[in-house]
Image (cartoon, rainbow over all chains, first blue to last red; front, side, top):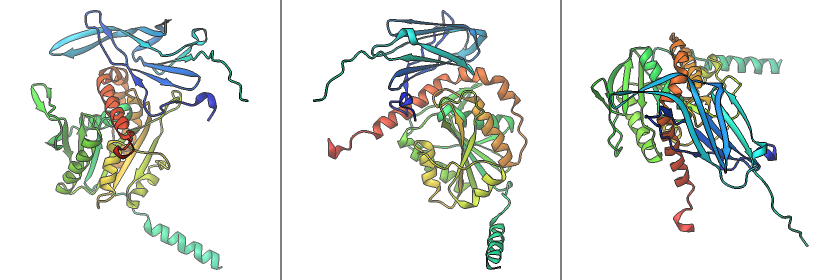
Length: 127
Length: 255
Protein backbone atom coordinates (compact mmCIF):
# COMPACT_ATOMS: atom_id res chain seq x y z
CA UNK A 1 0.00 0.00 0.00
CA UNK A 2 1.30 3.45 -0.93
CA UNK A 3 1.92 5.79 1.99
CA UNK A 4 -0.39 8.38 0.40
CA UNK A 5 -3.31 5.94 0.49
CA UNK A 6 -3.11 5.10 4.15
CA UNK A 7 -6.54 5.54 5.66
CA UNK A 8 -7.25 6.36 9.29
CA UNK A 9 -10.15 4.53 10.91
CA UNK A 10 -10.46 2.10 7.97
CA UNK A 11 -13.70 0.55 9.12
CA UNK A 12 -16.12 3.43 9.53
CA UNK A 13 -16.39 6.93 8.10
CA UNK A 14 -17.98 10.01 9.62
CA UNK A 15 -21.67 9.91 8.71
CA UNK A 16 -23.61 13.18 8.58
CA UNK A 17 -27.31 12.91 9.54
CA UNK A 18 -30.05 13.13 6.90
CA UNK A 19 -32.51 16.05 7.01
CA UNK A 20 -34.91 16.34 4.08
CA UNK A 21 -36.51 19.72 3.46
CA UNK A 22 -40.07 18.92 2.40
CA UNK A 23 -41.09 22.56 1.80
CA UNK A 24 -38.11 23.28 -0.46
CA UNK A 25 -38.35 19.80 -2.06
CA UNK A 26 -34.75 19.06 -1.11
CA UNK A 27 -33.44 15.59 -0.28
CA UNK A 28 -30.45 15.10 1.95
CA UNK A 29 -28.04 12.68 0.23
CA UNK A 30 -26.06 10.02 2.07
CA UNK A 31 -22.45 11.08 2.54
CA UNK A 32 -19.34 9.77 4.19
CA UNK A 33 -16.12 11.41 5.18
CA UNK A 34 -12.94 9.40 5.39
CA UNK A 35 -9.52 10.52 6.52
CA UNK A 36 -6.26 9.54 4.85
CA UNK A 37 -2.83 10.71 5.96
CA UNK A 38 -2.55 13.46 3.30
CA UNK A 39 -6.15 14.17 2.40
CA UNK A 40 -9.84 13.84 3.25
CA UNK A 41 -12.27 12.02 0.98
CA UNK A 42 -15.92 13.07 1.02
CA UNK A 43 -18.35 10.94 -0.90
CA UNK A 44 -21.97 11.77 -1.76
CA UNK A 45 -24.52 9.28 -3.09
CA UNK A 46 -26.36 11.11 -5.87
CA UNK A 47 -28.57 8.71 -7.85
CA UNK A 48 -30.96 10.16 -10.47
CA UNK A 49 -28.49 13.01 -11.11
CA UNK A 50 -26.47 14.01 -14.21
CA UNK A 51 -22.89 15.27 -13.88
CA UNK A 52 -23.81 18.66 -15.42
CA UNK A 53 -26.45 19.32 -12.77
CA UNK A 54 -24.08 19.12 -9.80
CA UNK A 55 -22.76 22.23 -8.12
CA UNK A 56 -19.96 21.94 -5.54
CA UNK A 57 -18.68 24.84 -3.45
CA UNK A 58 -16.02 25.07 -0.76
CA UNK A 59 -16.09 27.86 1.79
CA UNK A 60 -14.35 28.03 5.17
CA UNK A 61 -13.87 24.26 5.46
CA UNK A 62 -17.46 23.52 4.41
CA UNK A 63 -18.12 21.50 1.26
CA UNK A 64 -21.61 22.07 -0.11
CA UNK A 65 -23.13 19.91 -2.83
CA UNK A 66 -26.32 20.86 -4.68
CA UNK A 67 -27.75 18.76 -7.50
CA UNK A 68 -30.95 18.79 -9.53
CA UNK A 69 -32.65 15.42 -10.05
CA UNK A 70 -33.26 14.24 -13.64
CA UNK A 71 -36.91 13.73 -12.68
CA UNK A 72 -39.05 14.36 -9.64
CA UNK A 73 -38.75 11.78 -6.88
CA UNK A 74 -42.00 11.05 -4.99
CA UNK A 75 -42.22 9.56 -1.55
CA UNK A 76 -45.19 8.85 0.68
CA UNK A 77 -44.69 10.03 4.24
CA UNK A 78 -47.49 9.76 6.81
CA UNK A 79 -50.08 9.26 4.08
CA UNK A 80 -48.96 12.36 2.18
CA UNK A 81 -47.11 12.24 -1.13
CA UNK A 82 -44.05 14.48 -1.12
CA UNK A 83 -42.14 15.41 -4.26
CA UNK A 84 -38.45 16.18 -4.30
CA UNK A 85 -36.43 17.92 -7.01
CA UNK A 86 -32.99 18.52 -5.51
CA UNK A 87 -30.24 17.07 -3.39
CA UNK A 88 -28.40 19.41 -1.03
CA UNK A 89 -25.96 18.84 1.81
CA UNK A 90 -23.04 20.59 3.53
CA UNK A 91 -20.20 18.78 5.25
CA UNK A 92 -17.77 20.43 7.65
CA UNK A 93 -14.15 19.33 7.37
CA UNK A 94 -11.65 19.60 10.20
CA UNK A 95 -8.12 21.07 10.14
CA UNK A 96 -6.22 23.13 7.58
CA UNK A 97 -7.03 22.30 3.97
CA UNK A 98 -5.56 23.12 0.58
CA UNK A 99 -8.60 24.42 -1.29
CA UNK A 100 -6.62 25.01 -4.51
CA UNK A 101 -5.87 21.32 -4.92
CA UNK A 102 -9.37 19.91 -4.45
CA UNK A 103 -10.32 17.34 -7.10
CA UNK A 104 -13.52 15.43 -7.76
CA UNK A 105 -15.02 12.68 -9.90
CA UNK A 106 -18.53 11.42 -10.54
CA UNK A 107 -19.14 7.76 -11.39
CA UNK A 108 -22.21 5.53 -11.05
CA UNK A 109 -24.09 8.35 -9.32
CA UNK A 110 -21.42 8.73 -6.63
CA UNK A 111 -19.49 11.97 -6.22
CA UNK A 112 -16.00 11.69 -4.73
CA UNK A 113 -14.25 14.85 -3.56
CA UNK A 114 -10.61 14.68 -2.52
CA UNK A 115 -9.45 17.53 -0.29
CA UNK A 116 -5.70 17.66 0.43
CA UNK A 117 -4.57 18.64 3.90
CA UNK A 118 -2.30 21.67 4.31
CA UNK A 119 0.93 20.94 6.08
CA UNK A 120 2.72 23.94 7.52
CA UNK A 121 4.48 22.50 10.53
CA UNK A 122 8.08 23.15 11.52
CA UNK A 123 10.86 20.64 11.17
CA UNK A 124 12.32 19.60 14.52
CA UNK A 125 16.01 18.85 14.56
CA UNK A 126 17.22 15.72 16.28
CA UNK A 127 20.50 16.23 18.07
CA UNK B 1 3.66 -46.80 -12.05
CA UNK B 2 3.32 -46.17 -8.35
CA UNK B 3 2.81 -42.48 -9.00
CA UNK B 4 0.13 -43.30 -11.59
CA UNK B 5 -1.67 -45.60 -9.16
CA UNK B 6 -1.57 -43.00 -6.41
CA UNK B 7 -2.92 -40.42 -8.79
CA UNK B 8 -5.68 -42.75 -9.92
CA UNK B 9 -6.68 -43.41 -6.33
CA UNK B 10 -6.66 -39.71 -5.59
CA UNK B 11 -8.86 -38.98 -8.61
CA UNK B 12 -11.18 -41.85 -7.69
CA UNK B 13 -11.48 -40.61 -4.10
CA UNK B 14 -12.07 -37.09 -5.24
CA UNK B 15 -14.74 -38.22 -7.68
CA UNK B 16 -16.44 -40.15 -4.92
CA UNK B 17 -16.69 -37.02 -2.79
CA UNK B 18 -18.40 -34.98 -5.52
CA UNK B 19 -22.11 -34.97 -4.86
CA UNK B 20 -24.54 -33.07 -7.05
CA UNK B 21 -26.09 -30.29 -4.95
CA UNK B 22 -29.64 -31.14 -3.98
CA UNK B 23 -31.73 -28.18 -5.11
CA UNK B 24 -34.94 -29.79 -3.80
CA UNK B 25 -34.04 -30.03 -0.11
CA UNK B 26 -35.46 -27.46 2.31
CA UNK B 27 -33.26 -24.40 2.03
CA UNK B 28 -33.45 -21.24 4.13
CA UNK B 29 -32.31 -17.91 2.70
CA UNK B 30 -31.47 -15.16 5.20
CA UNK B 31 -31.33 -11.41 4.55
CA UNK B 32 -30.75 -8.50 6.94
CA UNK B 33 -29.39 -4.95 6.68
CA UNK B 34 -25.60 -4.95 6.26
CA UNK B 35 -23.00 -3.47 3.87
CA UNK B 36 -24.68 -1.90 0.83
CA UNK B 37 -28.01 -3.38 2.01
CA UNK B 38 -27.24 -6.27 -0.36
CA UNK B 39 -29.13 -8.85 1.72
CA UNK B 40 -32.16 -6.58 2.13
CA UNK B 41 -32.44 -5.85 -1.60
CA UNK B 42 -31.81 -9.34 -2.93
CA UNK B 43 -33.94 -11.28 -0.44
CA UNK B 44 -36.92 -8.90 -0.59
CA UNK B 45 -36.70 -9.05 -4.41
CA UNK B 46 -36.88 -12.84 -4.27
CA UNK B 47 -39.94 -12.75 -1.97
CA UNK B 48 -41.67 -10.40 -4.40
CA UNK B 49 -40.52 -12.15 -7.58
CA UNK B 50 -41.34 -15.70 -6.43
CA UNK B 51 -44.64 -14.49 -4.89
CA UNK B 52 -43.74 -16.16 -1.59
CA UNK B 53 -46.24 -16.45 1.21
CA UNK B 54 -45.60 -15.15 4.71
CA UNK B 55 -45.67 -18.10 7.11
CA UNK B 56 -44.78 -16.39 10.35
CA UNK B 57 -42.67 -13.95 12.27
CA UNK B 58 -39.45 -14.51 14.16
CA UNK B 59 -39.33 -13.20 17.69
CA UNK B 60 -36.03 -12.00 19.01
CA UNK B 61 -35.86 -11.74 22.77
CA UNK B 62 -35.62 -8.18 24.17
CA UNK B 63 -35.76 -6.56 20.72
CA UNK B 64 -37.41 -3.13 21.10
CA UNK B 65 -40.96 -3.25 19.73
CA UNK B 66 -40.97 -2.16 16.07
CA UNK B 67 -43.86 -2.65 13.68
CA UNK B 68 -44.45 -1.74 10.04
CA UNK B 69 -47.80 -1.00 8.50
CA UNK B 70 -48.30 -1.87 4.82
CA UNK B 71 -51.68 -1.33 3.24
CA UNK B 72 -53.31 -1.33 6.66
CA UNK B 73 -51.63 -4.62 7.63
CA UNK B 74 -49.39 -4.75 10.69
CA UNK B 75 -46.09 -6.49 10.06
CA UNK B 76 -43.31 -7.49 12.43
CA UNK B 77 -39.72 -6.52 11.57
CA UNK B 78 -38.48 -10.12 11.17
CA UNK B 79 -40.67 -12.30 8.98
CA UNK B 80 -40.57 -15.83 7.54
CA UNK B 81 -41.74 -16.74 4.03
CA UNK B 82 -42.11 -20.01 2.15
CA UNK B 83 -42.74 -21.44 -1.30
CA UNK B 84 -42.19 -25.13 -1.99
CA UNK B 85 -38.76 -26.04 -0.55
CA UNK B 86 -37.52 -22.45 -0.31
CA UNK B 87 -37.83 -20.66 3.04
CA UNK B 88 -36.83 -17.09 3.77
CA UNK B 89 -36.13 -15.15 6.94
CA UNK B 90 -35.79 -11.41 6.41
CA UNK B 91 -35.14 -8.67 8.93
CA UNK B 92 -35.98 -5.07 8.18
CA UNK B 93 -34.10 -3.78 11.20
CA UNK B 94 -30.32 -3.78 11.71
CA UNK B 95 -28.98 -5.62 14.74
CA UNK B 96 -26.23 -4.73 17.15
CA UNK B 97 -24.02 -7.54 18.48
CA UNK B 98 -26.40 -8.32 21.34
CA UNK B 99 -29.43 -8.81 19.09
CA UNK B 100 -27.37 -10.42 16.31
CA UNK B 101 -26.68 -13.40 18.57
CA UNK B 102 -30.33 -13.69 19.58
CA UNK B 103 -31.37 -13.44 15.94
CA UNK B 104 -28.92 -16.23 15.06
CA UNK B 105 -30.35 -18.53 17.76
CA UNK B 106 -33.95 -17.73 16.76
CA UNK B 107 -33.09 -18.53 13.12
CA UNK B 108 -31.51 -21.82 14.16
CA UNK B 109 -34.67 -22.73 16.07
CA UNK B 110 -36.74 -21.91 12.98
CA UNK B 111 -34.51 -24.27 10.93
CA UNK B 112 -34.99 -27.14 13.38
CA UNK B 113 -38.77 -26.70 13.38
CA UNK B 114 -39.01 -26.59 9.58
CA UNK B 115 -36.61 -29.38 8.60
CA UNK B 116 -34.12 -27.00 6.94
CA UNK B 117 -31.17 -28.86 5.42
CA UNK B 118 -28.98 -25.88 4.54
CA UNK B 119 -28.99 -22.11 4.90
CA UNK B 120 -27.75 -19.41 2.52
CA UNK B 121 -26.92 -15.96 3.93
CA UNK B 122 -26.75 -13.06 1.51
CA UNK B 123 -24.55 -10.18 2.56
CA UNK B 124 -22.29 -7.43 1.27
CA UNK B 125 -18.52 -7.13 1.34
CA UNK B 126 -17.40 -3.53 1.53
CA UNK B 127 -15.09 -2.66 -1.36
CA UNK B 128 -14.08 0.95 -1.88
CA UNK B 129 -12.57 2.51 -5.02
CA UNK B 130 -13.96 -0.04 -7.47
CA UNK B 131 -16.58 2.11 -9.17
CA UNK B 132 -15.71 0.97 -12.70
CA UNK B 133 -15.46 -2.76 -12.09
CA UNK B 134 -18.42 -5.13 -12.08
CA UNK B 135 -19.01 -6.34 -8.51
CA UNK B 136 -17.79 -9.85 -7.73
CA UNK B 137 -19.30 -12.39 -5.39
CA UNK B 138 -17.52 -14.72 -2.98
CA UNK B 139 -18.69 -17.71 -0.97
CA UNK B 140 -17.87 -19.06 2.45
CA UNK B 141 -19.13 -22.39 3.80
CA UNK B 142 -19.30 -23.79 7.33
CA UNK B 143 -19.25 -27.40 6.11
CA UNK B 144 -17.36 -29.12 3.30
CA UNK B 145 -20.63 -30.60 2.09
CA UNK B 146 -21.52 -27.22 0.56
CA UNK B 147 -18.16 -26.67 -1.18
CA UNK B 148 -19.50 -28.29 -4.31
CA UNK B 149 -22.11 -25.55 -4.64
CA UNK B 150 -19.27 -23.06 -4.89
CA UNK B 151 -17.39 -25.14 -7.50
CA UNK B 152 -20.38 -25.96 -9.67
CA UNK B 153 -21.53 -22.33 -9.75
CA UNK B 154 -18.07 -20.80 -10.25
CA UNK B 155 -18.25 -18.86 -6.98
CA UNK B 156 -14.75 -18.02 -5.74
CA UNK B 157 -14.10 -18.86 -2.12
CA UNK B 158 -13.76 -16.04 0.42
CA UNK B 159 -10.20 -16.79 1.48
CA UNK B 160 -9.11 -14.09 3.92
CA UNK B 161 -10.66 -11.31 5.95
CA UNK B 162 -12.51 -10.61 9.14
CA UNK B 163 -16.24 -10.90 9.73
CA UNK B 164 -18.24 -9.25 12.47
CA UNK B 165 -21.84 -8.33 13.19
CA UNK B 166 -24.84 -10.41 12.21
CA UNK B 167 -22.91 -12.51 9.64
CA UNK B 168 -20.42 -13.55 12.30
CA UNK B 169 -23.19 -14.33 14.81
CA UNK B 170 -25.05 -16.60 12.37
CA UNK B 171 -21.87 -18.33 11.18
CA UNK B 172 -20.82 -18.93 14.80
CA UNK B 173 -24.14 -20.59 15.65
CA UNK B 174 -24.42 -22.71 12.49
CA UNK B 175 -20.82 -23.91 12.34
CA UNK B 176 -21.50 -25.68 15.65
CA UNK B 177 -24.79 -27.14 14.40
CA UNK B 178 -25.63 -29.94 11.96
CA UNK B 179 -27.17 -27.51 9.48
CA UNK B 180 -24.53 -26.28 7.01
CA UNK B 181 -24.40 -22.61 6.04
CA UNK B 182 -23.22 -20.87 2.90
CA UNK B 183 -22.54 -17.13 2.99
CA UNK B 184 -22.58 -15.14 -0.24
CA UNK B 185 -20.58 -11.93 -0.07
CA UNK B 186 -21.21 -9.53 -2.94
CA UNK B 187 -18.68 -6.74 -3.35
CA UNK B 188 -20.46 -3.46 -2.71
CA UNK B 189 -20.15 0.10 -1.54
CA UNK B 190 -19.96 -0.31 2.25
CA UNK B 191 -21.74 2.90 3.22
CA UNK B 192 -24.27 3.52 0.43
CA UNK B 193 -27.17 1.29 -0.73
CA UNK B 194 -25.87 -0.82 -3.61
CA UNK B 195 -28.66 -2.48 -5.64
CA UNK B 196 -26.18 -3.22 -8.43
CA UNK B 197 -24.28 -5.57 -6.12
CA UNK B 198 -27.54 -7.19 -5.08
CA UNK B 199 -28.27 -8.10 -8.72
CA UNK B 200 -25.11 -10.24 -8.72
CA UNK B 201 -26.35 -11.85 -5.49
CA UNK B 202 -29.80 -12.53 -7.00
CA UNK B 203 -28.26 -14.11 -10.12
CA UNK B 204 -26.02 -16.30 -7.98
CA UNK B 205 -28.93 -17.36 -5.76
CA UNK B 206 -30.92 -18.29 -8.88
CA UNK B 207 -28.10 -20.59 -10.00
CA UNK B 208 -27.75 -22.18 -6.54
CA UNK B 209 -31.50 -22.77 -6.21
CA UNK B 210 -31.82 -23.79 -9.86
CA UNK B 211 -34.64 -21.33 -10.54
CA UNK B 212 -35.22 -18.60 -13.11
CA UNK B 213 -35.21 -15.03 -11.82
CA UNK B 214 -35.57 -12.02 -14.08
CA UNK B 215 -33.62 -9.02 -12.70
CA UNK B 216 -34.89 -6.36 -15.12
CA UNK B 217 -37.33 -4.95 -12.56
CA UNK B 218 -34.65 -4.23 -9.97
CA UNK B 219 -32.34 -2.87 -12.68
CA UNK B 220 -35.02 -0.36 -13.68
CA UNK B 221 -35.54 0.77 -10.09
CA UNK B 222 -31.90 0.92 -8.93
CA UNK B 223 -31.67 4.72 -8.61
CA UNK B 224 -34.98 5.06 -6.80
CA UNK B 225 -34.06 2.25 -4.40
CA UNK B 226 -30.86 4.10 -3.52
CA UNK B 227 -32.91 7.14 -2.47
CA UNK B 228 -35.70 5.15 -0.82
CA UNK B 229 -33.33 3.16 1.39
CA UNK B 230 -31.10 6.06 2.56
CA UNK B 231 -32.51 6.03 6.10
CA UNK B 232 -32.13 2.27 6.57
CA UNK B 233 -28.54 2.48 5.30
CA UNK B 234 -27.76 5.30 7.73
CA UNK B 235 -29.36 3.39 10.60
CA UNK B 236 -27.38 0.25 9.68
CA UNK B 237 -24.06 2.09 9.63
CA UNK B 238 -24.81 3.74 12.97
CA UNK B 239 -25.69 0.37 14.53
CA UNK B 240 -22.52 -1.29 13.23
CA UNK B 241 -20.41 1.74 14.12
CA UNK B 242 -21.74 1.75 17.67
CA UNK B 243 -20.89 -1.94 18.00
CA UNK B 244 -17.39 -1.37 16.73
CA UNK B 245 -16.80 1.49 19.16
CA UNK B 246 -18.16 -0.58 22.04
CA UNK B 247 -15.99 -3.50 20.99
CA UNK B 248 -12.78 -1.48 20.95
CA UNK B 249 -13.23 -0.11 24.45
CA UNK B 250 -10.49 -0.92 26.88
CA UNK B 251 -11.50 -3.84 29.08
CA UNK B 252 -12.46 -2.83 32.64
CA UNK B 253 -9.36 -4.42 34.15
CA UNK B 254 -6.96 -2.15 32.19
CA UNK B 255 -8.71 1.16 32.97
